[in-house]
Image (tube, rainbow, N blue to C red; front, side, top):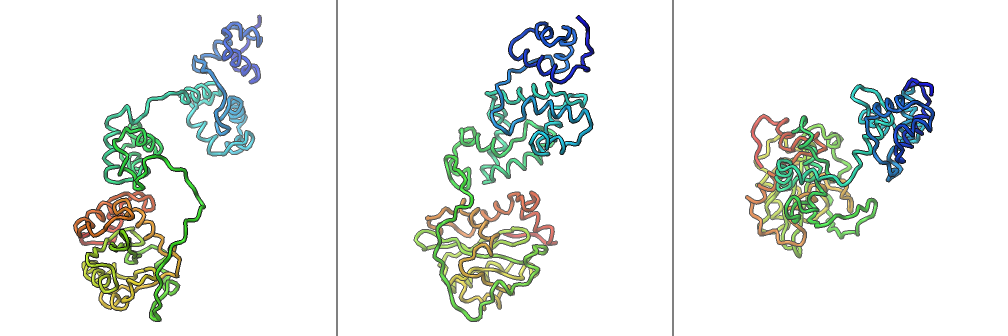
Length: 392
């Protein structure tokens, strides 16, 4: 039988050779079928990593097949760009790029059978759960969840802190799975929603309308008259405010969030939340804010701010009111109120929380890394603007 150089046979021949190996044929028998010497087939086998992993076929169309990997290798060999290769096999540019980076051989060469073997090895199940097998990772994740960080925030923290330790990193889904599998302690209280099982996402489904209290005051300044610089979020001092209401509308907590830094202040309202009490609390509990942080305050048209002219005069904040039924005009505050419900669940009595409790909650929230701030905390973002110390 003539001998053939291992890299000069067509891809079709090599593909058939590896198909026969996966079907259970011996190397010598597979070589005879495709018409090459046993030593030639052996060189192909060694180049593919000296192993053949059983291929049960792709579990989803998003996975690359052996044919896709052969097409990628052929394209690279003739000098085609990654985008051209991706178009030819109907995959995204990012998918093909990641495939080449992840499954190339140690010498940098992309060998389609080596690549397919590596992908099949990674897909093998069952795998030991990462958080189950690592005590240090489990402890770190548990500590951050106890501080009421979200799984996304924990995942980004791990990636930043343990850049050279892959074993100490976990994606959000891994953390969710570990939490719901009971590997991180009791689920209750770990997630800000308080759920004990996963909930399907329902994007685009409108929530029921809520009745809003409207006031009529000819001296109100609407949000459309607010300075344009407020929208840019380039400088601090522009706040959004609202109330979160307790059980039977019998108690409330005032919330203030700074638009540029997402820094939070909570207003204690032990005497109720009618207009005079809200005015007095806002004035006294924002008195320690530096003057450069007292520029504007955006609120909804709630009756609690009927005395807004007094508040403007006593605090120096210029108050602007949103349109009726337009909570997105205070989107930062609405998001913050959602985060605060982790600490102050709906339907509970808010009078049980002291001013010290509110300061501690604000401290925790201001020390959480925020994706919108490039994973800085609101405290870090605010300190970038202020020379003096911050108080909560």
